[in-house]
Structure formats: structure tokens, C-alpha cells
Length: 553
Image (cartoon, rainbow, N blue to C red; front, side, top):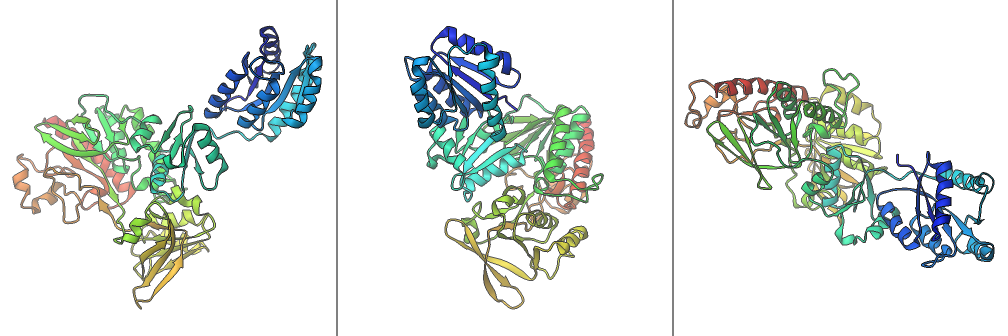
């Protein structure tokens, strides 16, 4: 934590040196001592200190200064740091002005110059004032601060990105948080420029793209090498496992993801059936551990960076990124995972990011404290989200089309849901419409048995249905099934296109696509088990096939 500041201002250089010497002698271990001969310079410095989230505990100012009276300086300084204590340094003739200042600027104390000896005339006064300041002081949040509107899709995107990449940040809603408006005034930001991000070093961004924000917080969007042995596209559990094994086995490995590590699993609030973690762990924690492990083995991680196309030219694979950058690798692992299906209705599109969320339960849960929320879906992700939301929401309603959860959800989650009093299952029902003004307020439910429709109040709607693979961007001849999942291994032989694409004498390896040297693992692969453990296993297995392929070429 940064030490708080004591700031002294006096136009007399000798007096300033004396007060600076005495302050450092007594307080240098606990406070940062700053001193200047100019009140104007001091005020400009205070603005910069405020932007950097520094705390000022105490101002000491001379009264008679040529550019500004000490009382006027303290008045303006208090506007920037209203909780700071104020001391006026006065000559005998200034005592009347100092007494008036006690009422006019809530001056805490005035000291006659000289104050020798400081042990008797200076330190006891300052000790009392600093002790009072410390007892009431609440340290400012140290880190990123995100300012925006709660029901703003663009703001939600930034919140989700920061949470997914495990960057601690403070969320400030401009409509309910006074600190948010104070920061806008400090930086001269108009509300029309929101969302805005205030960085820890005092810089700020208005309406940043994910790439701009990512680069500002230290993520790497561009490759460092000209050629890689293995390029992994997608940082879900399969991609992370492949990165760890690829890096640990000496392959020059690069991992590329358009958002954050963890994929769909990274949004899970609690994974309780993963081997070796009897108390469970969050998807974000699993992703954090894996990224740390991979980077320790020398793996490069590019994010946020989206792949727009891949081309195979002999033994080299060319990966085109959306910013025009190209990555060249000798082999590729496709582990782009899946996305939740969107509800096919304009009303849901209207409120996406403004009360309707696909996943994102951990990001938005606290925004709907004490309100009823609805979860659509009967899989494990929906169950984990319902359990997490039940901590803050007044009621959590789980809407499913089936009569019960037994066919789609793990038994341990079913048992937890049944034991949680504020979670209610609504079976044989679908959500058919979202209603509201500028954000979601109500939803319409339809009973699939009777056809009856009813409108209910909803703070938010979290959707966890189906799985659509991220494969639309692949333009080269990679064989997929009718749902868009990538076919691999012997399953490829059932397709007429396979013989036209595959020209090697050997059969494809188990996780190899119809393009030699391009592999697929995890949920994006046809026939995958859709479990974190199986995705991790496939990612590790893919590296062994990569070794075999590289040995051939």
C-alpha cells in the first residue's frame, strides 16, 4: 500500500527546508514528505496525485505567499482532498487571519513560526491530527477503476473482459456512485464518453476497445517470434493443457485467445468434480493457475487477439489475426470451444448486456443483489450459475424445457439446488419474450404442457443453453459435422470430401483434422465429452500427436 503524503508549502526556502527536515526526522517511515515553494505548483501536483490514487493526510501551508494566501491554498486543496488535515504556518501578525480561517475553511490548527523545539511545539500537534486522520481514513482502491452504466452492453463487455483475465477492478456505476462523477470531473470526461477506465498509473481510456484495454493492462497482442512449433487457438481447458505440455516439452508454443483464458469453463463459479480438488475451484482460478504454469514454461499468450483465417502451405501454417498480424507455425491446435446459443427473439437481442446475459453470472451477480433473477438451461453451467446467484439474489428461478434435471445435470449439483431455499425449478417451460424500457424488467414464460403464458418481474436473465462451436471463421477445407463441430481421426473416413483433402499414406491421428498438422481438442471437436477433465486430457494428448507430426516433417 502506498504511504500517505504530508505536503508542506512555503515561499521562504529556508523555512521550507526547516519544516521539511523536521517532518522527515519524525515521519519519513510512515509518510511520504513533499515540499514546494509555490502554491500553484502544489495544487497542480495534487491533481496528478489524485489521478494516481495517492492519499494526502496533512497540508502545512504558510499564510503570506506572493502567488496565493495560505488560507486560499488550503481552501482549494481541501476540494481535492476533503479529508486531509490542515495546518496554517503564521507569523504573530497573522493570528487574526488564522482564527477566521478556522471558521471559513475549517482549519484544523495554526502554528506560530518558529516552532522550535519541534518536540514540544510541532510534533504533538501533528501527532494528534494524523492520528485522527488515520482513524477515519479508508484507503482508496488500488487498481483499475471502470466507470459506466450498469445496463450498458459496452460496459458489460469490459467488465466481463477484466473479470475473465483476472484483473482486479473497481466498478463505479455513474448513476449511483458519487465517486464515479468525481472521477469524471477530475479527468474532464463527459458522460457521453463512457465507459471509461482509469488505470493504476493515472492514465485513463474512454470507450476503449478490448485490444486497447488489454494492451494498457499488460497483455501481449502481438507475437514475439517469427516461427512456432505449435500455435494453439483458443485458451479453454484443452488449449491451456496443450500449452502447458507443449511448453514443458520444449516446443516453441504460442496460445491465442480473443477474450480471456478459461473459455466457457472459465465463467464457472465452482467446479466440484475436477480431479484433485475435493473442495472445488472456480473456473477463473483454474485458468489462472494454468496460464501461470504455461508462461513459466515459456509459452507466449496473445490476448485479446482474434484469429480470422488459417492457411496451410506445405509444412507451414499461416494464421491471420484481425489486426493484420500473421503468426507462422509448423502445427496448429484448434481449441476454440463453444458458445451458448442465443435465444432467437429480437426482444432478447435488445437487452443483451442490459439485463440479459449469456453466461456472465460471476461478473454481474452483485449488481442484482436482492432481486429475482432467472437462469435458462439445465446443464452444469446453469446449475453452477444458479448456486452462485443464490448468494445475492432474492430468488433464483431455473427455467428448463424438460420435466427435471436428471438427464442434463450432475447429481451433486441437483442435490445442492434442492437444498437451497431460494432456488426454484420451473420445468416444462420456456422464456419467449423480454420486456422493459432501457433495460430488462420482465420476462414472459410459456408452459409447454398447457400453452399458458405469464409475465413475471426479473432483475436479470442468465442464459446457458446449447453449445454452438466457434468454427464459422474457418474458411479452409476443414471437415465439420452438420452442427459445425470439427471431425477428427477415423471419423473423417465417413465423409466423401476426406479423400480429396487427405493425401498422406497414413491415417489421420486421433485428434488430427483432414488437414495434416492441424489438430482439434476440447468441446469444438465432434464427439467430445463436454467435461473439463476430458478437455484437459485431449489437450495433453494432442501434444503427443504434434510431436509425431513434427518428426515426420
